Amino acid sequence: MRPSPFRRRGERRGLRLWPVGPVLALSFVAAVLVAASVFAAAWSLLGVQGVKAEARIDSRTLFDLVKLSFGVVAGAGALVALVVAYRRQRVDEDGALREAIRLHTERFSSAVGQLGDASVAVRLGGVHALAGLADDAPTRALRQTCLDVLCAYLRLPWTAEADLAADDRDGRHTFLALREVRHTVIRLIRDHLRLESDHPHSWQGHDLDFTGVAFDGGDFSGAVFSGGTVTFRNAEFHGGTVMFTKAVFRGGSVDFTKAVFSGGRVDFEGTVFSGGSVSFRGAVFSGGMVHFTGAEMSAAAVVFQGAVFSGGSVHFMDVRFSGAAVSFVGAEFCGGQVDFGKAGFSGGTVNFTGSAFSAGEVGFWGTEFSGGTVHFTGSTFSGAMLRFRRAEFTDGRVNFTGSEFSGSRADFVGSSFSGGTVNFTGLTFSSGMLSFVESAFSAGEVNFTGTRFRGGLVDFGGADFSGGTVNFTGATAERGGTVDLAAASGRVPEPPGPASPPPNWTR
Image (cartoon, rainbow, N blue to C red; front, side, top):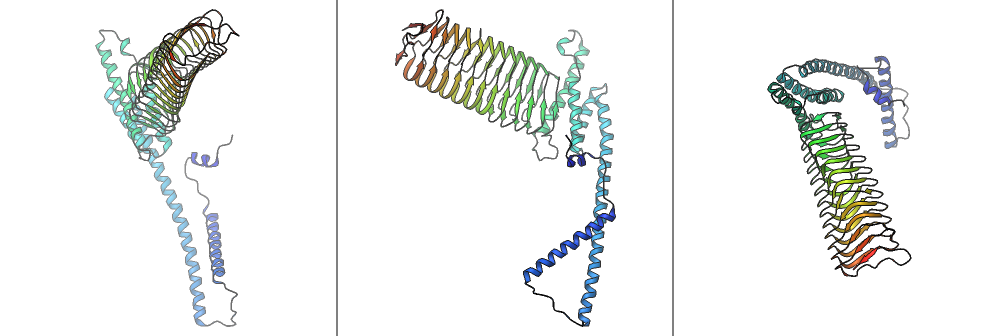
């Protein structure tokens, strides 16, 4: 695909001006056309019918013609002067830009040399020098180059403190000094992302590449990501805290694809996602914590597709979902915890479709469902715990259609169903437990249509059925299974008809 001519012109080096002859000719033609247009408009507006012919002219008329001739000549001279002055201004501006770029290049070379110095103090000076160069960069591209170098410094390999010998005091001193340099880079990036987008030193909208960086801490709190791409692909978080507390994501993209969380903490507490995306696609959580506590997600996407949770925890406590999409499609839960406790769903989707739960816990403790959808469609539960304890369902949908339980527990103890739908249609239940103990059903629907019971227990002990629907139509028991309604009150659901073997029905 051919690039835009505007882009090609923007990428040219140096100033290109047309020859002065054609420019003057075009200027004269344009001036004549403008004058003719003004004359024609005035003629039309004044309603002139014609020009009075005169056989002889007097001295006054002759003097007016002479003045008009001098005026035309003066105008032509002014036009020439204007064109020449404009060209001189362009040449001066281009010369000033060339000089600024030359000085920038000299300072850039010096600052980069400082970053490679053996002295930590000199490296710190180089970091601040590069940040200052980015602020003073004469073009956006040169600013991006400075940012690329700062990010590249973070990507350089370093020896972790845990890998040092216990008696290596010099090595530990060097580690702490170099960590200060790395964290200074992160702090300077954060400070510039906090500035308003129209501030001349703001770095909003630029790309930041942290691919493969090994993080042992860092503070991006309060930063505003309003454009560009921030990449943490293949990054390693194995200690310390990386903070995005109260950051704002507005139309940009943050990418943690295949990142490894083996320790430490990544904190998005109080962060606002009003657009853009955060991707943890294929990430591995074998330790540490990722916190989205108290975040606001509206028209944004958080993707954990294909992630592996073998340890650690991801917290969405008190998050407000009003139009966001959180995807755990194809994720594997063989340990660790994902917690949506006391979150509020008034829109958006949380999707666990096709995920495998063999250990660990996914919790919706005290969550409010007033809209939106939580999908577990086609998921496999061979171990792990799902907690919806004391959740409130006033609208929205929780969907387990086509899932398979062979040794897990889904806990809806004490939940309130005054609207919305919990759907277990086509579920295969061979072991484990679904508990609705002491839940209150005043509206909404819990649907077990076509569920196949091969064992396990569905427990409604002490539940109150004052409204709503619990539907077991077409449910079958191939090798057992029990539905326990002991001490349930109100309009207790009836067992499925005799057309198929029903599960054991205890009341």
